[in-house]
Image (cartoon, rainbow, N blue to C red; front, top):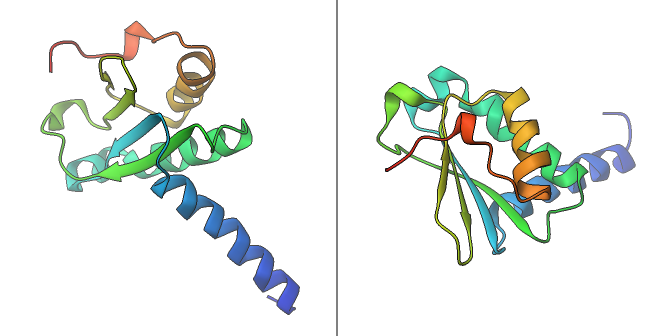
Length: 121
């Protein structure tokens, strides 16, 4: 860090991520971040969702947040998507690449990616 302006830029960038994770939007993306999720790679998945939602300009419509244990450790990383008036969608065995696809097809396009979904939980 070489200047106060650089520090301010870092602060603003990080505040945008915090707001994104704590918003109150119609769509919530919840990433399981218990020990099992983190060990399975949930942190890069969470970061990818935060970055891709912001990049797509959807931060006013979509909140990305984290939670503890979802209870299906064998399927980690697990991501749940809650939309007003719709059933919860649970994506399993997520990767950053799959997260990008979920943002593009599900969050932007409204199409659930059935290949990544677990049913009846």
